[in-house]
Image 1 (cartoon, rainbow, N blue to C red):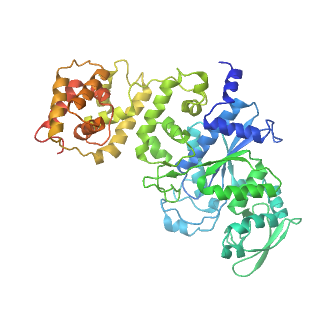
Image 2: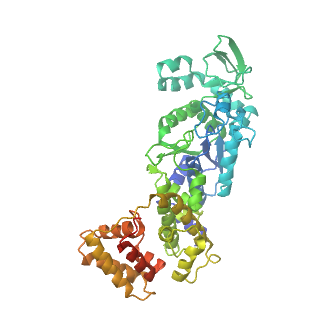
Image 3: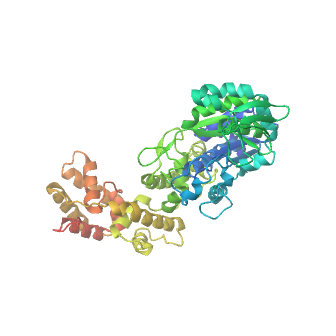
Amino acid sequence: MSDTALRELAQTAKAWPFEEARKVLKRINNKTPEKGYVLFQTGYGPSGLPHIGTFGEVQRTTMVRRAFELLSDIPTKLIAFSDDMDGFRKVPTNLPNQEMLAEYLHKPLTKVPDPFGTHESFAHHNNARLCDFLDSYGFEYEFASASDYYTSGKFDDALIRVLEVYDRIMGIMLPTLGEERRQTYSPFLPICEETGNVLQVPVLHTDAKAGTIVYKREDGQEVETLVTGGRTKLQWKPDWAMRQWALGVDYEMSGKDLIDSVKASSSIVRAMGGNPPQTLTYELFLDGEGTKISKSKGNGLSMEEWLTYATPESLSLFMYQKPKTAKRLYFDVIPKNVDEYYSHLSSFEGMEDAKKLENPVWHIHNGNPPKANMPLSFNILLNLASVCNTDDKSVLWGFISRYAPEASPESHKQLDDLVGYAIRYYTDFVKPHKNYRTPNDKEREAFTALRNKLDKMDVDTPSDEVQSSVFAIGKEFEYENLREWFKANYEVLLGQEQGPRMGSFIALYGIKETVALIDQALSAEGLAG
């Protein structure tokens, strides 16, 4: 398909990255901005270890950027900006050397020692971890540091502009604050020359022509300082706005918890004489308890944890799906996302071109997804690992090779990786909670009938035929809701509440082996012990 035809289809594609990209085009009136490119920005506050939400922001923004690049030939750039000059307000509970860190409260994050002892500062450590992860995904981005931009003078013009419209910014910010906070609030946070602390103190006087402010320290002393050259930084909402104005940001997304902050920063950009960027408000990620994930608490999943148990593509799919819907980000969402990714991938090639643009794998792989080559689902592999109760990949491959003779660890590298993921996931999350139960009288009769039916089958019986037989047994024993029959299969034979398509599992595990499994469940000891 020609690039022209593909671009034509992208004009009406319903996938959310295309909808966002068209908004950006409208914002710039389909013309190249003066700076020569469209700027996408993501922000990161390195006061805690980078969490998966930070990655998600870069992933999603990249998807919008790639959609924009299909719609237009206007150059683009993505900046990942770290607010690493922010004051260190509290010690995250998930860090080592808590007492040492507590001694550096209120210092800029780039002046706080690295508790892990691997980098120049805590901020440098966190920035490096973020960049390493983004690099491993192959993201195209430019990393930017607030400490660098403030101290090198890159923000000097913007800081002077903030001074020039100081009263207007105060008029925007003060109504958003409590009465007590209003008394001492200023957009500028001086960096104390004596202590190096980031100060939250009242500003008594501003002089835009001189580029200075006069502030009152806690000891009552009045101090005059230039606002440029890293001698001050801005409170984060004015800082966010100043950065958007200075860089000419065209697109930036943020979480639902920052809706009011977006309104305030957009008003400040306008007060400075700029045009606020196009924005997207995404819903928050929740941990296993339904609480918002936090980098200071370390709740929810980390990027490293997800990639211990599943493929990078499954994480990308999780980020793509419904950004405006709140989602639990916990270990139990991993298997579903792995299998949904391969389902989308397998359907891609046979789709009409217009539908391909709405398939998540188009956005995950920048329009060029690989060929599907996954004969087994992750869910099936998890249950195979469960029944085999092994951490040896070769044991699982013994069953896989019989089910799919064309597959091998060498020819199907992704499947081999998936086997490893399945074993790790089973060992850490399934095995500790397995709870086999003995069948009741009705179930015992049904399992006996299933056992006898399977025992008469050829070992090469197709999975669909096996599935039909399992289904037929449920009907024969008058299960009004067949889900109850399949749930009994999972709980009695596999020791868990949910499970795979039984026909596929039995074909993989083996018909004779399944007969033995049922015999064990029906024996006096059962599987409960």
